[in-house]
Amino acid sequence: MNTVEFSSLPLKTALLENIESLGYTHLTPIQAESLPHILEGRDVIAQAKTGSGKTAAFGIGLLSRLDLSSFKVQAMVVCPTRELADQVCKEIRQLARFTQNIKVLALCGGTPFAPQRDSLQYGAHVVVGTPGRLQEHLQKQSLRPDHLKVLVLDEADRMLDMGFADIISDIISYTPNHRQTLMFSATYADPIRDMSQKFQFKPISVSVETSH
Ligand code: ADP
Ligand code: MG
Image 1 (cartoon, rainbow, N blue to C red):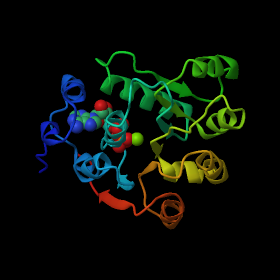
Image 2 (cartoon, rainbow, N blue to C red; image 1 turned 45 degrees about the vertical axis):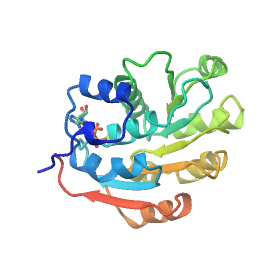
Image 3 (cartoon, rainbow, N blue to C red; image 1 turned 90 degrees about the vertical axis):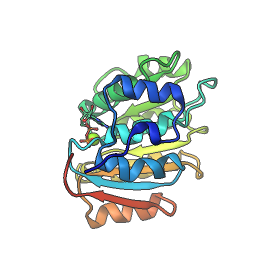
């Protein structure tokens, strides 16, 4: 039984109120394992089943790091599919629902490039997207991640299965070396460990076998 409450974490009051307004009171097991380390700024690789609350683990982590007075991109989430990216975008916006002037932008393929480029010109705090489109924005310099603090690879196992390894490497090459890198996966096979070794610094590895 997991009994860690969100109120016991070192979170800003406004973020805590947002979380509690969603009816979240206690951390799910994977959140309890990962979030304290994430909030300390550590690199984390987390493995847990689908539906265990991984999105909120990194969503809360990255929201707690944002400086809203700057409209530079400070967090980037890479997802395997558009559907997932849209879902993640929605959850992060929910977690920030009462926060004024926070911009969370979806950058997915299959939709026109130009409106995304135009949106990026006005700045954003968080971008969530699919590998190909994120890479395109980076190559064309419509997305400049020089102030990136947190990089999230969501469903990393699925992204590798879908053949995104090289694109992800390329995306990461644009980001600052001192970033925090968070990896989430439903499985923990060798390719995931290799990816962690390549892109993470002294990562903390957490794993939860059952969903909440
Ligand atoms: P995963 O990425 O691990 O597959 P999700 O992040 O999509 O799982 O979370 C599954 C569901 O759990 C979502 O509907 C989310 O709103 C809900 N959830 C996440 N964290 C909590 C929590 N601490 N308390 C209650 N519900 C939560
Ligand atoms: Mg997920």
